[in-house]
Image (cartoon, rainbow, N blue to C red; front, top):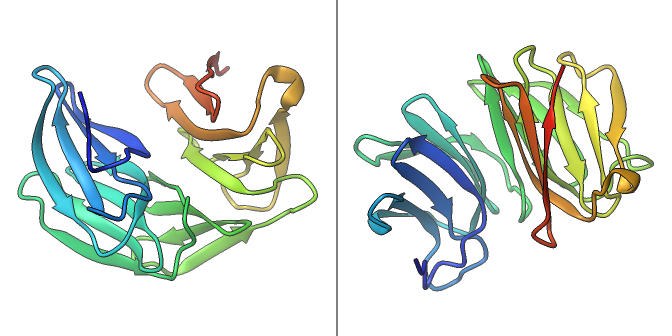
Length: 203
């Protein structure tokens, strides 16, 4: 189905029949499309004040990165929205959540903060990760992040103090942008910008 005028950037599931898709750098309408994937129809469009990029589900809410504004929280039941982290985010920022922590990419940094937006730790290492994109957390709060320009993936410990490169160009990564850690089935999905994706079993 067509999302016009939205370009479609990032996607997350709401339930088995419904997904949310950010409009990305569409300037005609900036917001989130709520889509019924069974009927291939648009249920709702939630307007946002600027271009939204990364999005993730958090219980009955969505968290979404909005350029120049910060991270918005959107209720999936009544579609009300509120700004929960005020920060002039760069375009192409991504967000993930685990228990009481929110993780997001901003410029060349991974930022971990609590639910009030207070920063817990920040990770940046330009010699390893360049042009940070997708981000996801596992069941222990370890953070996986991909570098689009460095074509790799790094795992960061839950305290932000340790990191390890785990996937590179040699593993098929080519300008990776989006990732998702399936906590229930212990699988990691990585998508390149050239429409090639890989699914890994995590032990």
